[in-house]
Amino acid sequence: MWKQADEQMAQRFYVPGYKGMLPFFISGSDLDLLENRESVELNERQLLEGILYGLYEFDKNPKPWHEKEDRHTLTYLLDFLSSGFKFETPESLILDCAAGIRERNGSPASRIVLLNGIDLVPFIEDKK
Image (cartoon, rainbow, N blue to C red; front, side, top):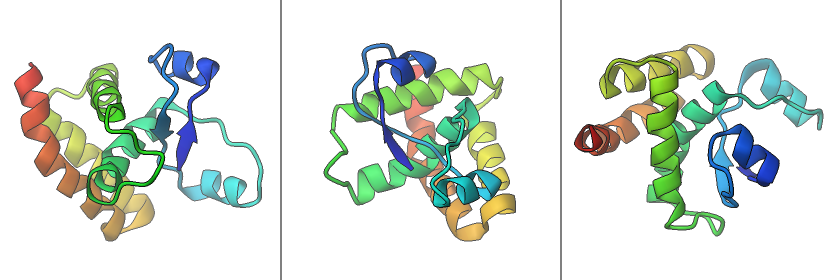
């Protein structure tokens, strides 16, 4: 789910002043709540998984709300959240998130995260 960041959300998720869209990976009971038009408390893990999943769409099948300059914000958040969750390597980040998504949502969603990981790992490692 891509969600428009207002000032409160931008501050909550470490990008004050950001006005773009943020991707959240919603599944399980939270997805049921959304489908019933009930509110869901968004969290950092959903954002981390959402970036790993959502960058595939962003790069391969962009939508009108995907602004090219927003990719930098998403990769910054990926690096920031990875540190916050204490992943020791980019590979462990990708594999851990892909495994969790596979357990909850099956192989197709997990595959997308792994495909993104192939493109993201060199970028993340270049920044260190």
